[in-house]
Length: 455
Image (cartoon, rainbow, N blue to C red; front, side):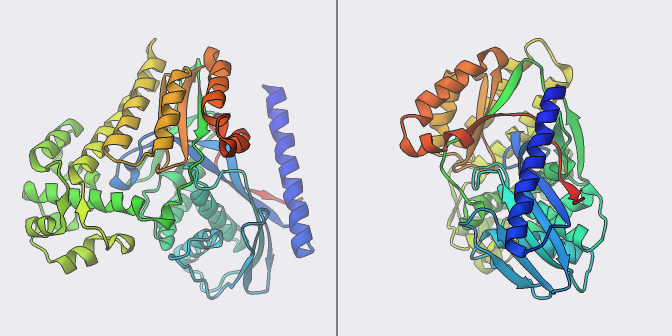
């Protein structure tokens, strides 16, 4: 263990030194501090944080890192060690975020603007920033949210302010909506609240994190299907948010509640004070499996098409005509139950805990694939290969429609598992094979976001 810790420290120092040199080459000076925010892998609980339900992620070693110096220039200068991400400079007093053009620098500026507005800062310090990252882009491992969190941390430090980790997480979750993504806060919460060696049960309203000890005898392996999905650049993600919002209102209307103020399926359960099992029964009773049209929704709720567009649909779902309310609600309530069952199995640690957790992961993927329809053929193929290679459970992780799977693998099967996945998924395809080293890796619970002061 000491040898591993020493290796990690040396690796971090090496990464910081390289970033320091890149910063000096770009700006002709040394950075004053560094900020780091990790990515995450969600073990179970997909697409339910924005519905108000608990999720169970852990931070990973891959992260977003920024080297920073503060200046009197009244500008924010952004550069990236990856040449394909172009430099960007903006006035500190005139931050604009173009949600129609979700470039990397706009995600960074989401974090800057969020902290500025939370602290009511009339004027921001000028900054020179050099950003580096080891989280594969558009992979479902939260590279964009980690960038927002890193930027929020940078802005707080550069302006000599202090906020708690919980406040930082809540603020960064809200400010990512400047780019148009209506997420629920899981990614930002684990990035700030993570602790090395433990997964976390993340609960919302109020935000809180509880340690979850993962069972001995198994490891988690991440595998990237190599299909990229930028959730801010498409309507898939926000369409699911909207469908859950409409399902909430339709179910509330059927139970005689004031549906107008209810936005989340979790809030509806609290209002009704019933179990998840009873919510699933309500979905079966009230919603039909066939897609709902705009006219049917408006007629049921007693609203006009204009009200639907203005009050319920998001900016990038105005085109939608059909809504699968039954399927989305079934997924959310069953997946919320999966999270609680996963946590209970970890806590009680029965003899067959690994098998129980694997089964829950498999059920979760089936729900994501069949009810939430956020998988893709490559993810399904990769999940099948992982299970055939010896995983007890495998599922997509992150928003889906591409990105990564996470598999639970008994320790004694790890080497043969990795070899089989390489041979059956990566080697036969030239593009995947070229990406394999950064696409298939064992992961352990990592630490949360931090500031490192130079010197």
